[in-house]
Length: 178
Image (cartoon, rainbow, N blue to C red):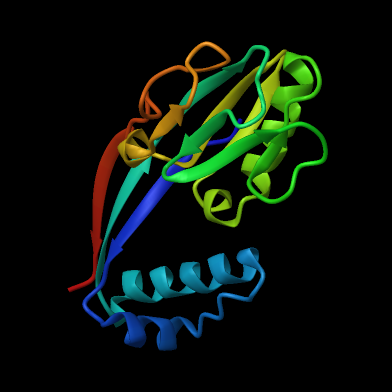
């Protein structure tokens, strides 16, 4: 069973000091970065510093849907300001192919969303039978602020103007050290 949680750290050092203590390189393997962070937490627990950690357990990711139904060329879906346009045929960047049935349209829309550099750090899209689900990458209420719009509510029906149902889960604060 996977447990989802967010950790917000409050440390007495500046960001640069913390980075130098952890010797973090954002190009490092994520597991290596996690080990370095764990080492820092152990040192703080041993009295070599202090920190406060706010754990958010069971945070829920916000989501919304776009239902494809006979999409026409030039119809658009806009996610947090990024416009994706339907085209007839091979799509370029920020475009999706509307020349197939609803499922094929949705498959192409999912590919366009997941390939967009701006959206890739924010949401992930999936498709089931012509319905595209757009899910925030991070759990919490912040995902509820991601906007979702369509140029045609019949051919590209969106579930709401924003992703919804994101929640922060249960928050617990731990303070270690001085």
